[in-house]
Length: 247
Image (cartoon, rainbow, N blue to C red; front, side, top):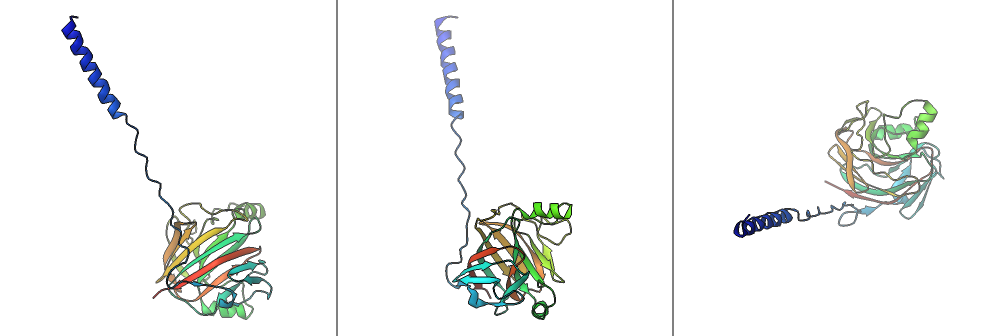
């Protein structure tokens, strides 16, 4: 190869290398999306304390309050209810199970008829829409106790109707078609605080667990009633319970 041809070849080769290097620039990092946690601050929000609830069918010492912090023994199974019935609302709360496999819940729109039955000593839990508050160990204990799979519930924020209440769950849906299963598993275990944001408007209920929307449904009947906190066998705590009533 003569010198002019050799020079031309080297120049072309260097040019190709420069283009290749330009194509290998480090990829731009994707922005990190932050979770939005609604904490119940702002106009219209009100903190709930023991003064805002009435005992329905628990013992006098089942629930103990220190300001906005509720301590529940879990015994007996039963509920406390809001003093007034509510319709459209937003609710935030933090909850923590104190025993492995603990069970509890928040009832939206518990029917007055079912509450009256409980007050008369008939039954344990009201009819309405329940937002499950379940410890991560519940499935393991259920399978050991009943010798069958726990595929009909989760510990990450199921939303479902109880009794004769009606509800069309958002997918994914439990095998029985009644429960809205969470789209993500975000619940933290025993002795760790979890954050719920519940939005209930015109028969539609949506649940955010620890900052992310995971479950819900629509077509709830009843779509008005009492707000209830549930005692179901194991100690559980609630705090920072705040509500905003909506038109």
